[in-house]
Image (cartoon, rainbow, N blue to C red):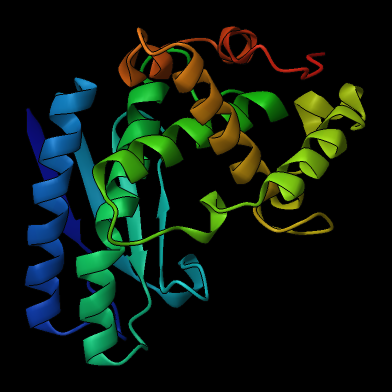
Length: 222
């Protein structure tokens, strides 16, 4: 297992103390995730840049393929807030993005709306199973809320599934905020409850349509 961590130097940076802390925390949790997900090589870029973070959270993550991850943090926060984010929120991001990395190596993130919903759901569930000090807002929902969201999903224009608007379905650009994340995490939780003999790594390497079928839910697949 090889984990390479790169800390970008920027004009508005975090303190040297927090840079060392960030690297230590990321390495610790990336190593745990890599072992669980059978990842033998990962490159992780730490980028202090506000524009790449979720505003109310102060951090962000991105995994574009099976080889690297970008983790961002807002350097304009107070020193103690940055330390809190690194210690309490960044580990969740590491597990989330490492799950994406593992999925990229097999079926891939996917190119359709349902592929993305399943990929994000897998990452959310894996992250929360390995880190419980931060409860992500994109993974919280009420039963009544989720029922409405599934009605919303089944009424979608199925012909647009391969050309869906990611910001619209996942970041509230015209639809409820975190919609795709909440749908995905709910589906994966249902699948795991109904199929306790299937471990999460098997699901990570499984086609999204098969995962949806395992949920035994009334989800219309185009």
